Amino acid sequence: MKVKVYIFATVLFLQIGCEENPHMVVGSPSFPVVYAIFDRYSEINEVYVTRSFSGIEGPLNTAQNFDSVYFENVTAQITLLGAKGLFDTILTQQVNHDRNPGNLCFPHYKVLTLNRDIEDCDYCTIKVYIPGHDTLIYGIDLLKKPNFIYPKLPGTQMTMLPDQPLFITWNTYIWNDVSISFEIISVFESGIDTTLMTYKRIGINNDNSSENSFKIHYERFQYLCEHFLTNDTELDYRIIGDIDIEISISDGTFRSYMEQMLHEQDYMTFHESTDGIVKGVVTSKATDSLNGLRFDLQTKEFIYYDPDMAKYKFSRW
Image 1 (cartoon, one colour):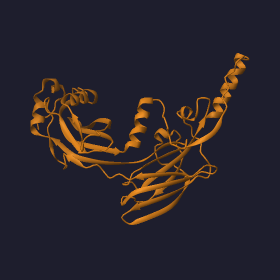
Image 2: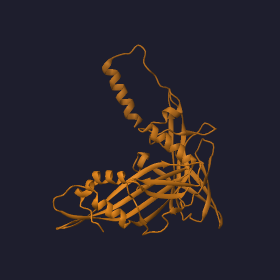
Image 3: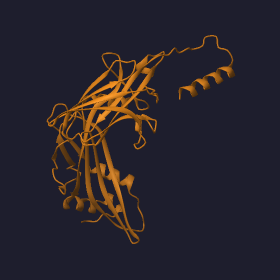
């Protein structure tokens, strides 16, 4: 990537002629950037080690425009602590062909992969060895799944009215992402079509309470219908099926990382440790879901008789 930039700059310089005060950028050593978001309920966890480059604005600002450059011969030692005692293993870099790269940009990026069931482990230490650099040491508390307080069981009948929003509560964590999906079954003379209307809320947190809560107001359900459903003339009727909830949780490290990422929007800001090493994010997460919830009869009847919802032809039952 950087080679292309330099070539473009050279061509442009030749086109416009000499400049009296050229703007020069002097490079400096790269800094390690480490990503590791462990999930104790996943049998595959990865440590991603890349590097930033420094420029005239300093390593932190320059690192916001991250690249896909790697250190060579990187290894890592993983120490897991749980009820069964200690477990150590050495990981070596390998090219990952299977996963969506997401924010890592490069589709076949090199990772250190831990292929092991770690559900019984509570704590993890990661030591990253990079030739020519000090050993990087990170500790991770492996979070357990969030506990639903209400509703607690699949199949629970839920109420959602203009004066009574659908209400979800769970035990508190510093960072919480919530996703709620409504299954809409559309019945036509020619067959059946199923639509999932999903609403996501990122970063719910409440540091002063023993529980977190999330509300879906009736107006929000109307908004989802407007954006997901069409007024098809061949439609016979629609049924509101299952309601599924998914909650993902993490800690303060992830919250700080996500807050900066969301605020910057177009690029990622890396955190700087006390020793000056840009470290990315090293933490854990956990996800749980509650599926098969349903609207109660009162809610279905209200939707059925609501004149603003008549165009969607929802069934009363």
